[in-house]
Amino acid sequence: LAKTTQPISMDSYEGQEVNITCSHNNIATNDYITWYQQFPSQGPRFIIQGYKTKVTNEVASLFIPADRKSSTLSLPRVSLSDTAVYYCLVGLTGGGNKLTFGTGTQLKVEL
Amino acid sequence: DAGITQSPRYKITETGRQVTLMCHQTWSHSYMFWYRQDLGHGLRLIYYSAAADITDKGEVPDGYVVSRSKTENFPLTLESATRSQTSVYFCASTRGLNEKLFFGSGTQLSVL
Picture (tube, one colour):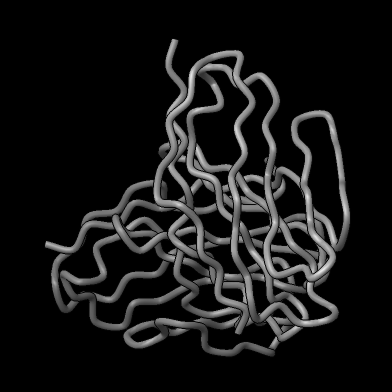
């Protein structure tokens, strides 16, 4: 099981870049790394997914080093609306019972 | 996403009662999941299903029963509710294990 470790919380200000790192030392060869965002009273929603190097979409970038034992979600120029809990998820190829989330990172963005 | 719906949105019950939480998805996704979310524990997997009539335990299955007679439905039953099962329950589905998960809006369950 590719257990993940993330910081419990982070604080930032509007307009800053935020980087959230996830550690996953036991990641398997075929595992992808996926990040989700969750607002209060809502289910998590997909942000970005990657396998190696760098992936970018309209809301975030994902950086994955060559050893794949960690990954960094980068949110450019955050706003108040980015205040949420962010989860990193790995271990998909081990079967459905490996899709267990960690406790996530609570990001708080202030003015 | 409107393609996966959970009901009810809120439920209050008493200890010892049977409760069923419903989950329905319109995408014909193969995989479906039930999670519970409690403060300090993040999302914990209760049960999952890889296809109709195929289910398996997750991290915290005790006290719960699931079935999947049709691809689009994945009900979760608490056979005899306990206070420790007070939680927010999320259902999710995905086309494949390396695809993104889609979550429902959740069911907030209170067991008194």
